[in-house]
Image 1 (cartoon, rainbow, N blue to C red):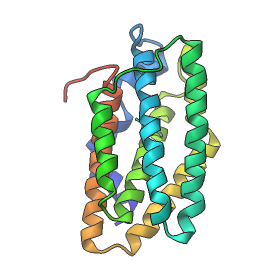
Image 2 (cartoon, rainbow, N blue to C red):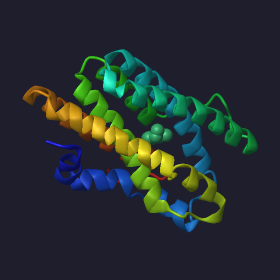
Image 3 (tube, helix red, strand yellow):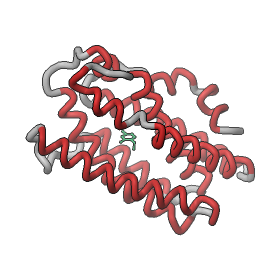
Length: 206
Ligand code: HMH
């Protein structure tokens, strides 16, 4: 089993995570007032918990993945500063409450601590791949969102996601059957949460 097989085996789930009315609204400029800001505040909180999740992976990563995982952590810390600047420009509240979907995502990250490295690196790859694919689909984006679309579709981000994919494929290549099942379950959970995360700002029927 490889990462690409997971996407193909869960096509409708993956499409839910990467094609969404929220993203159509970004592309076309048709989002309701305040929807983007509501999402942005929640995404900042998500990155905070993502940083904790990735930090826990450092001591678990095989030697060959350490630079990748640590580089990802540094990029997330940088991303937090960028979010803070954007939030300030837009006068957004720094102390918003976590949406239930954000809480559920944090619960998954906490639960992954008790699962295999293969499940963890597959989950991390899926988190970032879904985000990259989703923003790529929204590209180039309406003028008011263009800087965000560009920020989340850079060649550097694409390269990082490709490296995560290779790391996940390597882990899956030597994983036990049980670990592969764990990785597939984690992939599905991530895909559902990514879909639900876009729905924070533009609810759709589940
Ligand atoms: C919901 N998924 C979500 N937010 C993000 N910032 C990323 C993935 C990428 O780290």
